[in-house]
Length: 120
Image (cartoon, rainbow, N blue to C red; front, side, top):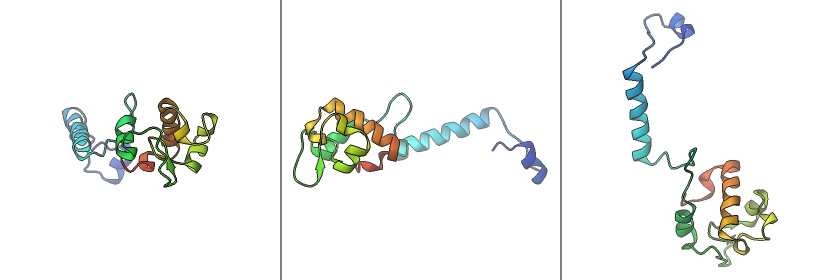
């Protein structure tokens, strides 16, 4: 635990620790997040596997229109598609290309997070 000088004044017996213990603590957190799946959210440089999400959401059918109110490979609601700028490509996600759907999905993920996809 690293504490500031202000915290030491409030908790006089607490010292700041740096070095190997800090590195080990950070490593333990990273391993825990990785093994629990909590790190599945988009990360700098990698991001989600949109093909895997589409496989789960629509069986990988980027033209999916089953009449359930969700469209395309990533199963966009029309309101989400519009809010994330999808209308610049097509009126509904199932009418857009895979690449266009992924571009809109990235923007939607930035707006509201990966919770939009139950498979994400």
